[in-house]
Image (tube, rainbow, N blue to C red; front, side):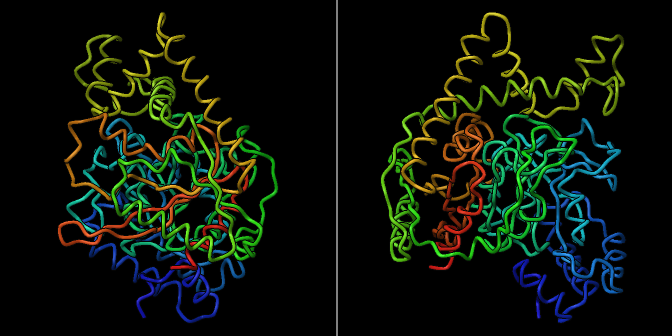
Length: 477
């Protein structure tokens, strides 16, 4: 049996039942990586010997009874690990070895998971296509001429290509949900504060959140249950108990209401996206879920607000990469000013430089009030829109993107067009609410079936309810 094409839950159950050994499973995934990764470029590092040693320990009884014992996973390369390098897809910290391991990764390993390696991403998680990585673009397993979505494209592609059973990513403005949609997998961004960010290299600290990828809703529920929960070294992580997300996902949807926001039914959507939405609403109604119309009037301001807030925070967070303390340092620098300027000029890629400059501008004297302060006010209005909408429904359904993945290089010269790929995802981060992207439909483009994603957005810390509605949609397929 080819276990690499099974869901994470199926793999976990087979391991627990003794139907497959952890060693055979890891060797199978490593074989798939060896075959497919040279073309797709999902992994930056593969920890072959370590994974095999961990598998042998699991087969000898280690981690018996743990929720992920022997399950092979991948993690995005902006999560700190004491093993290997943490590069964030950038030349700036190409050789950085973290002194500690991110909380989310530590929790996976404590649950018995086997980490196969680290996946590629847009540099410092800045991008919607995964073409900004210093180690080359990640390619979409569904069509290798197309982008997988970013910035967690490596993790999404690895799951879609059967190179791991599940994966971790990070989501600042759609960086889990967009790749999940375009690669045809499930991607969940939790509420801000649901999962500790300790050990996640910061891009925009008020927006970043660690989340999960899987092949089905149960996969996402299982992984979230493992990594969620408070952590004493992370003051932004909420001290709330962690529900049994898998059990919650299987509860009856009776009495739940799903909202449809007119602002997400844009004429800019591909016709296949509109058909996907109609099919989704029919499935919810058939399952006894009431469908109501809601309004999110400040939706059109989301992209502008997001790209002010996130670049401002990026400008501050990336100031630490200055060639002085750690990371790359220009060999051509003649004085202190050149150490700063040449180091950043030589080691940062074009998109990171663009965002640093935008962020520095909106924070500068004379422009702070006009841009950054105004963006914070609009952010509050966007959150209040969601608060009012969730007074009428339990979740909101919308597309993850306006259409399928585009060709590699098609939008590289048009930053604004690239940023608009996030139009349906950024407001979720601005409001701090959870969102999940599900395989929604496929559309034929140039003879290839390309995935489309259906997105569900829920109230803050209501991931259990979101997963329950996600299972309703998934079960209707």
